[in-house]
Image 1 (cartoon, rainbow over the protein chains, first blue to last red):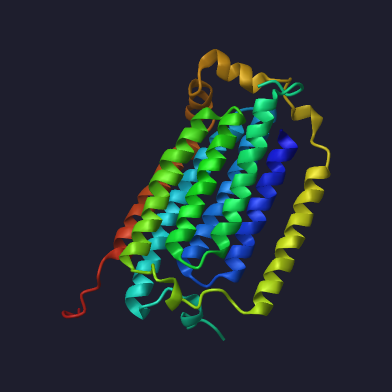
Image 2: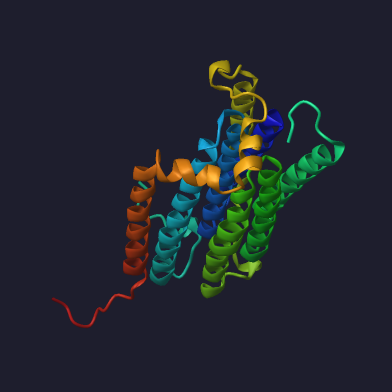
Length: 97
Length: 185
């Protein structure tokens, strides 16, 4: 089942990338990043079946980083919303040249 | 689960939930309403939890449901509702056609790259004998084979993770605090 898992993982990751590139809602972009992390986790678990349980332990670390990232990222989004009253990234362009 | 002769039940569920995950992910990136998108993402995560269980990772599957679908997605939904973003019509969300085409091209290129990678031969030297991991779980239970390495080989990474979480909590509190503008200095 390794090849099938890697296939599903690749497709989910590509969908996540397309989501990040096509959407402008900051929260949805964050959720797309979570989708990409999940896709990588699937690869880790699939490889763990062949190479030993270390892959499953790495999934824990990925989940921890995802939780930390969600907490900080959503706090940033709330701060941004308070400041500009929007989460649409096309309106948040102060750093654009 | 044996690798060579898999029961039809197993194979059917593996493909079924893999397809459910992909279809839900497609629905997720195309929904306009953030709440609907979040619900589809929860569906993706549940399907992935099923795949983890089928791939001999029962504890990871549980964590997926508890941490991802439970905790992280609740935080997302909470923020969506806190910011009152539920009205899809107000958001001119998706980018222009050129952006979509470019994103599709990037996605296809990425897919092609990953498929070439899956065609490469895996290093045989590291491959464990058939069913090693499955037998380990069958013998010691679902948690002990994970807990051993986590608290021995990966102890330093585990401790550093706790520092990371502390930093994230402090950062979230500082960012979320409302600034007092009245008294300067």
